Length: 456
Image (cartoon, rainbow, N blue to C red; front, side, top):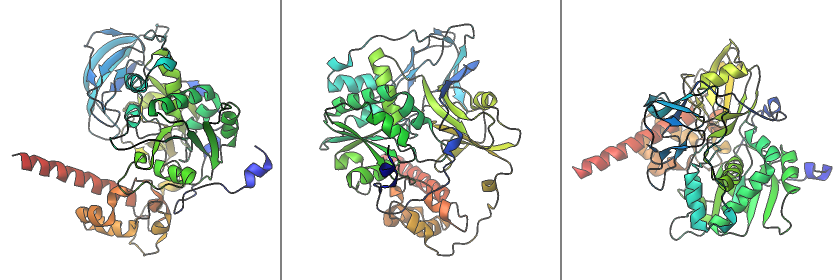
């Protein structure tokens, strides 16, 4: 990238957004390193959107690394694979980051085993039909690795009446601290482009656009250097602005198209995939393998050895923190990024396919202070920051009064994707995003109860 590339205006979405401190310098220059295997791995059966997987192994059964251990329970579901060679110690409820326990397959790892992937086979992806690719992606257990964990194969089969005409590849990684996607674009460029071509074939499109924020121009250059001459795949540097990595924002930035309220990318002819997902797709499908590990950024002021680690699925969070040297003063751990991630109450939860980052804060960090909540002063900063053109101030007032149904029906609550921009800019420290999450959860529960009542 030349000087001109650094100063020209970049594309971005039209309204809102913020520029939080990035803190990416802690890990952006650190290559991906493999984390050792923990003595036990707990593979949750529900670590993706859709129906939980169904166990196909029994307690006491020996499994080899890469072997299927749970099957998909329908189309919107994915199977699970053994992250390590060992023996199934239990199939039991396990602690989760969300709070309630969930069923998991617990594997006692054979520490003396070489831990090679012994369950695989060569697949000629070039000869597969689009439907066969969709099936292979599901069998690989692939989900969105940007954090949403939506089954990837479902995105390849748009709803009836919808036509995908372009694949958009999300390499923005706009969350502070996180650099796992950045490193994947630099170190696994060939696998990424192979995955892009697979996604294009599955969706029947001839064009793909890779969007990368302009704080990662080295990744743009690495991809550009390996693009095919045909021109069907292009890479674009776009403005660094949070939440540029939200799929609706990225579609607007690259294509100028706006997904309608309550709509999906397919409504505007687009399918969106994360770079980490496609890199795994390009690596796993030709080998007939399943997803058993992922790259996770571990960072923050509470970590002695921050970095980008290849972590087996099911690894206990406590084991990861011990390995990277969590400081004695650490007092908050967030799975994901600080803007949209989830603070965990226990470090005994397992790493899932959705965990892109682990951010550790110390007891005396500035953002741990000044948490007093004050009344809304009607400054409208949240309205200016909201990328979805919502009125977070009004939604917050309605949430405080527990008028959750009004929030949804009159103020488009469900268009909020909980990016956290409103809470970030609020001078009164009102936890607006948390209010909206609670409101959505209560509305969902009420709908379920209403549906049950109608059946009686």
